[in-house]
Length: 359
Ligand SMILES: NC(=O)c1ccc[n+]([C@@H]2O[C@H](COP(=O)([O-])OP(=O)(O)OC[C@H]3O[C@@H](n4cnc5c(N)ncnc54)[C@H](O)[C@@H]3O)[C@@H](O)[C@H]2O)c1
Image (cartoon, rainbow, N blue to C red; front, side):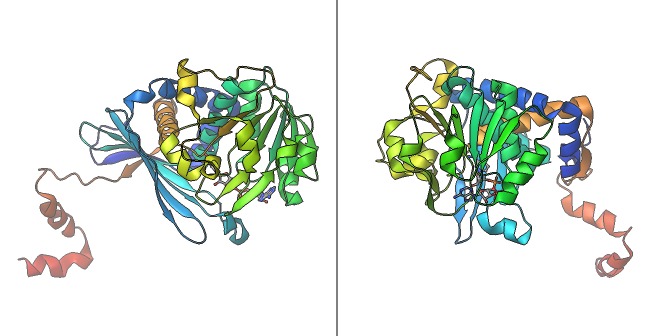
């Protein structure tokens, strides 16, 4: 990587796609999942805070920072469920990694694609500890931008090869089915959530709607199921009926954030939950019985993005799939920041008045 102090490696959307294709989507998800597990095992090393959210009637813009003492990372991300109507993504993101020692950014990258990958990898890691053994069938309710990534992660990491899809918009299901064709799935397009969950060992809910929706009702959830609830991730934005939560063992990323944003915002503030990092570190049990209903109340936490940024940075060294961004001012003498502008003015014709004004 460049030694030039003004340069920060930048991963554009184009380079991210090339990185994913050069790596292979399944391998990317498996390796990213390993980085997430590694960081969850050292959970206590990290600065943690609920993300800083700016809510509006249409959506939310969030900043998600964390640090392990050596490296700092943050993600900017939005969530605007009506965006797809104007041709925009519901979720877009970019992120930065920086050196804690000198504060200099070390990486700037697109994170819209990376967020879909990290969310899917995180879901699959949680399911590895919580789902019934050797699951084959997953219902996926909500077949939007995140959905194919979820499906591929569950196949690569758990061996899920039967999908039961449902979306209120049949064209979303058709697109998801078409995109996943030839990837080793047996896919059933369903006409209701009820139909989709039939025979599924794992149910993923990944819908976008800025309200307390009821994507799953209590009668749809039989014993032994693992629920991967991804779409409820803001105050007033949930997917599951409260009665399901009361029958489930609930696993979360970071309780202070999930109590504000997750499905458990519907419960008392002291309702017991298990922190997923403890399950991964081996200090709390994951699935402990065949009839247990496990729920991963996913909202997305900064450490997962940190893992994703760390993974991409390591991959760049091997692939060179980035460009050099002239992001940081680097005068010849560190305190001569204004002098750097004066020297640049000589090369810019429009700046002649400035040069004559200062003689
Ligand atoms: N937990 C996390 O870490 C995390 C990360 C990324 C995104 N998300 C959330 O995941 C959700 C999905 O994101 P996306 O980018 O795929 O959005 P998207 O808008 O591309 O897709 C959402 C899909 O849900 C469908 N839908 C809406 N209401 C439904 C209902 N009642 N039943 C069935 N389908 C329904 C829509 O028709 C759409 O196809 C969003 O709510 C987003 O905020 C969570």
